[in-house]
Each structure stands twice: as structure tokens, then as C-alpha cells.
Length: 165
Image (cartoon, rainbow, N blue to C red):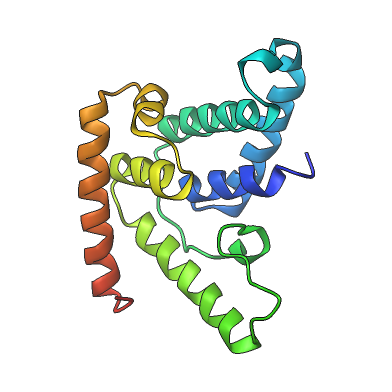
């Protein structure tokens, strides 16, 4: 749990945009893992991949169930962010800039439609393949590619409007 809780929280936060909901989902993921641990088969892949697959499925299922309203991004994301973690050599100014950029990107992601946001997050931030995303979201691979392309274009437009790029 210590090793993967930040990563699971980060994924949940990206989908919900809400600290409390992300914490609840993170807790639910680890409860689900505990209850289904006997289903884990090491011959089918390592524990980390299985854990993240269970987490993604649960978070996406919950995401689909909720008719969520966007919230302010970045409320405490710096405490849980692992992709944009600072290098020890960075000066305080660089740390602040990195945190602000992370918050702006998350705010821009929150402005995408749920379908586009899900595909962009899973591909560009979580590194899933097109096929994995298609299986996870139960949509054709061509639809995944289209949504990722449209999502990236829309994200770029939003970031330009926010004067980030």
C-alpha cells in the first residue's frame, strides 16, 4: 500500500478532480485488492500491473457512475503528484514553477469532456496502449485513437487560452 498509494491516488484525482473523492477511491481500491488477493496469479503478470489494472477499472467504473462537476484543480496535488516530482537539484523557483504548471495542466484537463479526458489521461499520463484503453473503456480501438487525438488538440487549445503555451 505504501508503495502504490500515491500512484493510485494520483490516477483517482485526475479522474475526479476532488481530493476527498480521490482519497475514498484510493481506499476502495486497496480494500478491493485485499478482498480479491487470492485471484492474483503471478504467472499472468507482476503485482504492480495487476494492482494498477484493478485500480483503473474501479476508478473508471466509479467515474462513469458519477455525474461530477468540475472543481478547482491542484488543491493538494503537490502532495501526491509523482509524475512531476522535483529533482533534488532544483531551486525553489523551479519547484514553484513545476507545481504551478502541474496545476494548470490539471485545470486544463478538467475542462475536457469526460470521454476525451479519460482517453488522454490513460494514454499520456498512465502510459496505457490503445488496445488496453479500448478494453478498459469497452470502446473500439479506432475510437480511442480518435478521442486521444481530439483530446490532445482540445487540451492544446485550452492551454493556449490559459496562456500556458
